[in-house]
Image 1 (cartoon, rainbow, N blue to C red):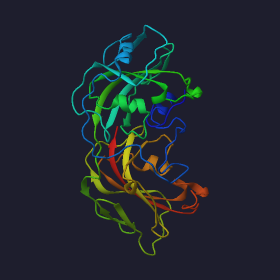
Image 2 (image 1 turned 90 degrees about the vertical axis):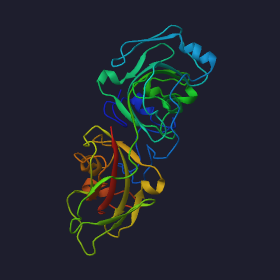
Image 3 (image 1 turned 120 degrees about the vertical axis):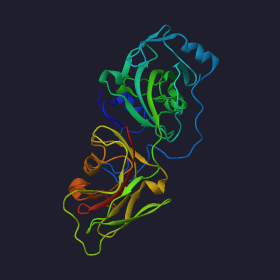
Image 4 (image 1 turned 180 degrees about the horizontal axis):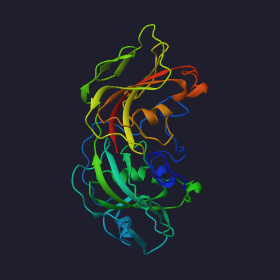
Length: 345
């Protein structure tokens, strides 16, 4: 199965689980290689903390989960045995194998976890992040996760091992995903080992950096985000510029991480804003270095620290190339982004 939607070593099955609608393709929007229209894959909505995870589902469905045996240490790939096949539930069901501690996962948090996924029909493995020794991080967001995965993750805490069974209506629908080996009647079985639950920043936090002459200047509004002013009469840089406006103190961003950001993008030629996550009310998440965003975004944040506010000046070669991204961006447009780095996992 192919790698990559949201994080490194993420297979096609787990990738598709990050999509809210079964008909969506495994590509992101936002400042992607093909479009400038942003959409969120995380949110900073200040929701009430979720109740710590407990059993979820009907009595009958939870009885069905009791026929599944999960063995192995919490830090290792589980062995999953389904005694009665096919395994079928009417609603998403959850059993807590090992309870965790700390903040429960809720909208606006990020969960870093190992996932092992099997078919309920015959117990065959569809995917396991343990096979690559690389856990995945994802934002808890009802609009960007499979419904069953959103329900099943809500409330989980660091250190938890939970067993989920997701029916088709909360998974890949009645059409299934034949490309992933999932039919329209398939119930999927998930064992999730939660390594961490964290909450991204809501904006850049750190030490202001003195403006650099000849580059755009930026002011910031708590509600609408950055306002970008292009220097009058200045020629656009011909190479990529990645300049910190605020120096954060968090973790250093590296290739392969899931990076959550707030951003505003404008055109150098007239300062007009073509895209902003701030106006949508939700940040944007992507995997650094996976080629799902324009190359400037894959390159421009590596080595920066979480909490930073970064000014990117992007020539066409590092943006949308000679084709541009009509109707707003032509093939000769230089782009200006102001990006707050909120979390990296």
